[in-house]
View 1 (cartoon, protein in one colour):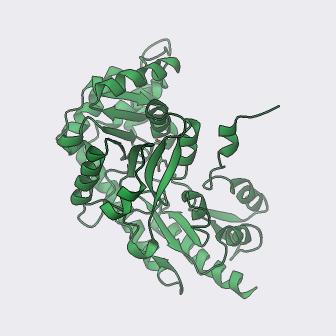
View 2: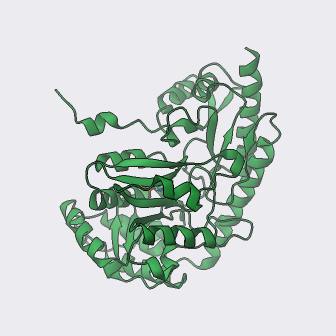
View 3: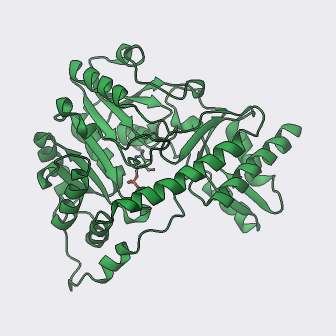
Length: 396
Ligand SMILES: Cc1ncc(COP(=O)(O)O)c(C=O)c1O
């Protein structure tokens, strides 16, 4: 039987594809530090489960396709704290930011259309764009330059008549790079001049460190009709399994048309929406506490990594990832070595090889992404295991 060209062109997620090998290592009694996936160990705020426990309906009924109004109103209040006026008519609740991205690409791309995105980028964009018949066109960035991409010289030569959107993951995954307000303004100007959508993936909005401000493309009034915000409770509230995300736009024609897809898939989990509404009513201090914890983890990871001779990387300004070059020839081979041959006192470590976060063939072969999602002690040990692993690997 034949499969579609689309699915055959897709890749397995580099974040998850080594999990079966890690499982074998665990079955053999090794402890594996999982630095490969953005699954934080931070506890989900209790109010999530409390709200679900107190949910009194006798039937778990379908929700409205755009989301339950209680959640929409809580999200609307949250955006007010950013000076943004987002009403129910400007949002659709989705099954995670992932569904928001899939729906966006399905709604704005025709076969062969292109979306610009700085590489390395969150690897699943390949899958989301390909499933809609589109193509990712990378704006290549470099570790040595802090992965910056927001200049006219880097962006404009890549725009063709097929370009429909520029995607900005801000703060960045996998690089942790945070756009400045000037860079956002420039991207806004370019989008306006070339009539592009701006897909603003802001699922890490609050995780901006060292005095950097949490901001949104939705705050730039001149482009509000072309901004599509992707949002999610997964990272902000450490509620990845809740599968609640959002598509937000002031472009009511866009929202009205996405609603066709939303109605087709009926609705998002009703109970998870009830829990998510409670999360958005947490006080501002919650964000500060969580941010301080991730910032401390980042410092630990960066400090430990920089002790390894030959590592090239920058201190990330946001999100909870760090991408760096390691002094090994082939990162996937090194990861296999860590999982199958290496251990230190019965422990080993796993990260995500960065090659799958690039669209340009050949790039990222010596880079890895670390998610600093474990407590500080575990992060220190995880990076120590990388250091010991490199020594053992290069000695073979
Ligand atoms: C940049 C970015 N966007 C979107 C997502 C999707 O997250 P979710 O579907 O859990 O909301 C992720 C998950 O890691 C991400 O890193």
